[in-house]
Amino acid sequence: MVKMYYLAVIRKQDLKGAILCSSSDFSNFGYFQKKSVKEFMRFSSLMLVGRTDPETKVSVREQPYVCHAFVTSDDLAAAAVTDDEYPPNVAHLCLNQLLSDFTTHFQTTTWQSAQNSLEYPEMKVIFEKFNSPKDLDSLTVVQGQLDDTKIILHQTLDSILRRGEKLDDLVSKADDLSLQAKTFYKGAKKTNACCSRF
Image (cartoon, rainbow, N blue to C red; front, side):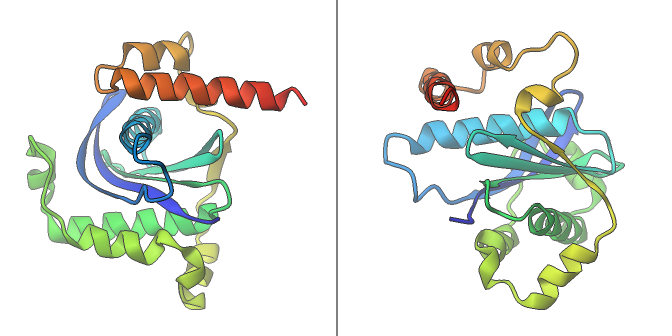
């Protein structure tokens, strides 16, 4: 389908982070799934940013989704969750543009000391521009392909975890995930395990 579901600017803090602003489109999900999907995509983005080294572009496949992240040298990060058909180079082009625009709009001291989400309406414009990459002009896509920074692609979220960490344990201990979101994760994992045997 080629779609972006979630986009966020994150202040990295150790293995966690703080969402400074975000934009999303969950219209493809059922009414009762939307909240759980949003929580899990938010959780996955924070977890990926927390485990990504500065000046590194990472894309991680998890079930039918891919989470993309980039962390700058001053611990400002951007993350996007897309379907698995979305081109990683275009996702990282979006993250670069988002961070460039964000740092033009906010001084470093503003986002580093922010206690709550920041008002940043321009993010919605960037999200809508990159929501469907087929609508991007060819020059934008070519610029994304010319970027010489290598994107590190991992096959699952488990592959980015630190030694001794397990995704199931992190999900069950997460304070920012509701019981419904944890149940959604377990159900999706069982469904994919069942299907991957054939």
